[in-house]
Amino acid sequence: MLRVAVRRLSSLPSRSAAFLSGNDPLNGVVGGGGGAESPSASRSIPLLHPFSFNSQYLNLIRGFSSEALTPGHDMGMISDLPATVAAVKNPTSKIVYDEHNHERYPPGDPSKRAFAYFVLTGGRFVYASVIRLLILKFVLSMSASKDVLALASLEVDLASIEPGTTVTVKWRGKPVFIRRRTEEDIKLANSVDVTSLRDPQEDSARVKNPEWLVVVGVCTHLGCIPLPNAGDFGGWFCPCHGSHYDISGRIRKGPAPFNLEVPTYSFLEENKLLIG
Image (cartoon, rainbow, N blue to C red; front, side, top):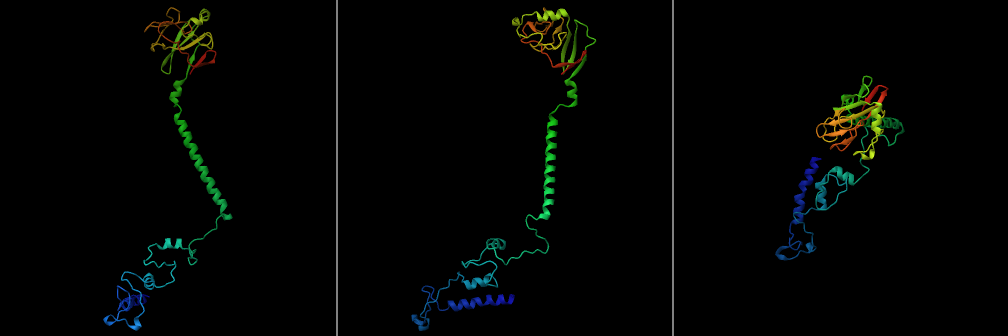
């Protein structure tokens, strides 16, 4: 095959010289001696430009067969498309796929559906489990830890508190006053005209059991700690700026704008109190 190619390429100069001998590059006809036209060469011969290619020569340059896999286009230049791109643009039945090393199954093979469904279902189950685990981790990370929850609530035994006395306990870093009121204290707290108070509030709205009053021991003025069983109204007195609270923890006199805060609490038993 290499010899055939060499022979074809070697024949190009001789053929070109045969066509180009005696041709006038200006008028493209065969010239005779002294400018006279020969009768045998009276007809014109097409001029071959040195840089132009005939289709015959182009086929020789392209390859050894004129019946190429992809149809050629004689446009005076060699196509620079890759073989794969040319094959895609010009499909032909001559391309045969090699099925020796693999087995091709038609789409929707019934024998493979069960396995495909099993793989897809298993993958979706794994994805859902991972997403659920991440959501639970995120939600639990925002909840309070055990030490914080331990400080969030406080149990107090009320059996040792005598009537008419006040006990101070610590809850969430703040003092809490627990007062066991007598019958006289309860009557005095209910006899107050609510409309005359700076922060109007009924005594029944501040207690769950009239015998027990539970308030946060922080003055609502500037955060001082009032003194129990003191002041002009028998409740609490703040020595910082002179605020007076009555037996129900309501502000009666001084610069404090609000009553003492009532925390969240509940009675677990008759003598057991849960704050928080």
